[in-house]
Length: 160
Image (cartoon, helix red, strand yellow):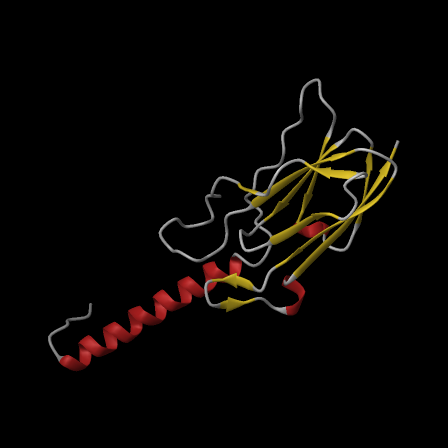
């Protein structure tokens, strides 16, 4: 038990609680930079074309799809700026990027974490390749990203 009767005890208590708070914010903010495992997977659709879901862990890969498939890009942070499809006649972007619901792992009472995922939808139209790129400079409020967390690129290969 700590009794806050003396000025020295109050300073030690304030220092100790500030350290705990800073560590908690740093841990949650760092978690916002990586993939969010709590994002629910896409549900299969009934009677429509398949939905191919691309997430953070697909960075740098080729994703094969069939013309008519729907493609959903879900990145784990709202700090991503998605450039869209490099070949709209091959892979058409179906609207702007939208914020998804806040995952349970993303505290609502700490601003600036960037841990709300974004989603962008596409439709595969014709044979060819399209590149989807995204970039960011921040992995949280006042937290610069490490080099391997600043760029996202995936190549979608569409076949009829």
